[in-house]
Length: 332
Ligand SMILES: [Zn+2]
Image (cartoon, rainbow, N blue to C red; front, side, top):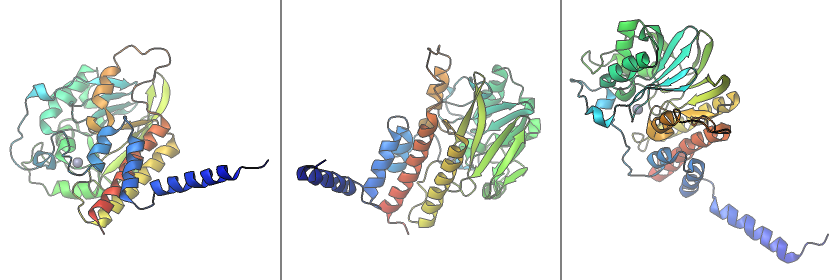
């Protein structure tokens, strides 16, 4: 077959244009890659990580960092949410902004992240009871990272029910330096996860805990199985998201980027098709949890299932925004 020279010219032109649109190392190309990966599914994650000057939503700040002083409970009308069963053995116990989760196993309950101290009673303890679970069965409390919006409830679950608190090594160190009067109190050190991560087994469930330093030095992410109407599906849980404190410290950006690649690989290896986070603005948990109670039509999936490609797209957003932000700040 004779190929018309115009076609050859066109093909070369198309290839060159594609190359121009994605020059390697260019900030805009990484933002474009993140935007494409985010689509409409992970818009909140993209906006918060890739667009400079966007102030993140949700309550964090000083109260979120375990600052001293009496906890101030915001108006319940602005945050309270009912608990929801989102998989056969996974319950969402979040406020409308921050998520906690209860994973039930044959050996008891694992609570993932514990929210602010003012949310622990209404959301986690009453939440467990409302869905028919007993807070006394909580065996482990796993803290993704030691910021107050995720860890202030840990000490109470430990002291009242004897649950063991699991945290990354560096975040334990930071936690144990807090003064005793921080909101929620200071938990005692139980299980420490080092840089190699660990497998945590309770009853019939084994969680792959992956050390993903970046958002904090001890941030943990997870891969674990749940059941969806009897069928096993794998969850990837992203334990720390924002990068606003890295500034011009290139090593911090590189560490964060490496961590996202690491958890993305662990998720891919396990075939994870669900992405969860501890903030609803990133995974849409509050919206999806309420959708669970709506009748599923034939062919419709659990709204938390985004597919294996969807999970990878989520981590691509984190990775590409991190690379882009490092370039934007000229971090070395
Ligand atoms: Zn945080």
